[in-house]
Image: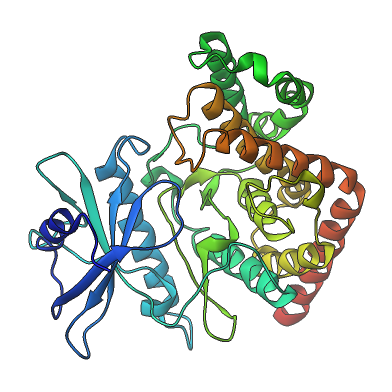
Length: 380
């Protein structure tokens, strides 16, 4: 089916250096933020592409965002070039340049566009199905962090300032309640109480950072499981969606990945009784993640991982609830109370994770110790 915005997408594509010819352009994927299109090549032997219109209302400074992506992908490519058996072109996203040798194009209406080579034969999962997938997801995000551990964080811009700053999210939440532009505050007293009861505890990682106990690293900051592409054998191939790669704490990446890996239900599950966690998937992801990162993480960072587990679904629930109260300005919604349904699902996940707190902490500590012993044995 042809894309109903074909003239706009065709005009954008004309500015990029593409091989072959364009046979079809149609919407692709399930992302909340950007408009993404699959570009099918009509010439045999030529690659397919992904075209994205970047949401410049969410990402206020697209040139700096694209500078981040260029720097990060080049760093990853350079590091993998020295790894025997690595395939940088398959393991790292590749931007297609414009005819002006830029990584993006801005059209006459002020829209920003970019093009990636499509990584053929890969797939992603919105819901993790097997421990093997979870393990590979852990390895992918862990390897991503490890490869970027020597990239100077001062070289990266904050593509969304205070993205995982829960203290700032709480401030924005309070401001949205005070404005109450959609008249919805009276509808959500239980959700408001849920947030207020946990506000101080959820600020622990921020306090540890201010006290110098946790180092800032180059982190992905949006490690939901579908941001890992797996090959046909369910082996991790590439980490995608690099828009939020910027300085952050490692617990953010671990916690957000756990949020979407171990939950047996969808992110916006309506039936809260269906929300539970799969401990086997937690164990597998943790093993993969720490296998790749144990050599770079401090003891304090390992300790902080358990704090990130409930924090990230709390932040996501808080963001969904704030957007609902503020009239649904940020996330794409598919029905009027979609953001509220999302918030309730995330808050229920927080409760489930809290009920398993001791077990999750113990698993992290034991796995970290085992990975560290294995690393030390290899180095001897």
